[in-house]
Image (cartoon, rainbow, N blue to C red; front, side, top):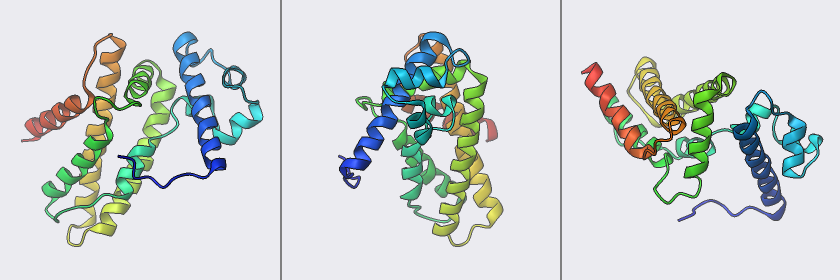
Length: 201
């Protein structure tokens, strides 16, 4: 079920153009590598000018990894059921799990392709790490808004643990994809969470 607000025609066209650029970047990165791909090649493949490319993305790497819009939306609507740190962490994990994608999610294969690229390219991983810091900042703000009771250190720890598990899951998913192994990202995410709990007791 899609509960997003319908976009006007101009916004839809902008979003379509952005998605076309992203797809072209992914295809070129997979075919010839990130370093060998140019902005001009991405623009030509997506049928836009370089100027239009730069209206949507600041770098070629960003075009291949345009951000985690679903996760940001999940953070913006996150509800927590209590103030106990473990309960808060479980609420955050449930929200993140929902973002990982269901079996028939049309974006799932694209996410897998991005994860596979991340596994093999340090520049893309650096951009992903910067995006994760932005997500952590917003999640910390959201929890601070929604919670009364936990001190800032507790909120920070909940956020850091949640983002670390998210990041580890994506990294492992990409490694497995690079090896040609299919893996359910939700199951992998659950295993990462369980393994962390086993490690820390």
